[in-house]
Length: 113
Length: 112
Image (tube, rainbow over all chains, first blue to last red; front, side):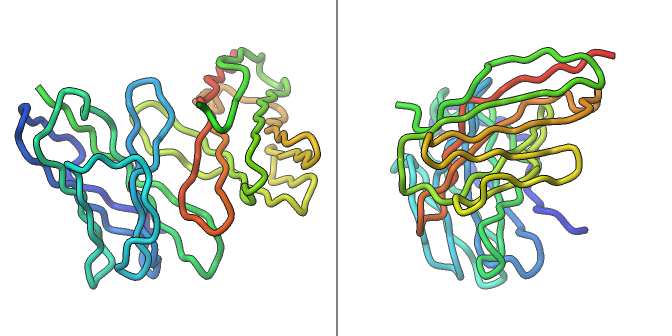
């Protein structure tokens, strides 16, 4: 079965640079979620989109923005990167009408040097 | 403040034994409780989930027990196998929101 696709899988950036993470949800899924997981920590919810509209917002820094496009893929844009932004970034998707089950992608490992 | 408290932090079980991981919450607005399994460097994989109107749900070797009055839920892994060695996260979702709030995770090691 098709899974959530994330790209790139690894990304190395310097402080103050910008990064863009992409997420392609499972086909027919209409909701996309972004989570950040620091080393040895639990995933923290950042933001979600349903049918291309922001549906919920968590602890996402103002330096970050995200959107969902007409083909349902989503992008997380991160600017003025800080060392503390180094983490695994996961995208998850779900089909809202079928319930709350969120299926996670393999993640993007962002390293800020 | 951790909204979903998970214990133990780590667990060592022999092959064939039962692994039990517990979670507790305070927010009565939570209405969906999934468990995720995560291998190092991989994304969390949904194992099993339950809603508050059910006290127990079983899928294969995995069982969720849910105690609404105590605001606790637990994951039981029967006949634990070395391949089950991973980090397990409980989570909860408030009614009418999208977010999952995760517990702090339990690192399970199953020895042959």
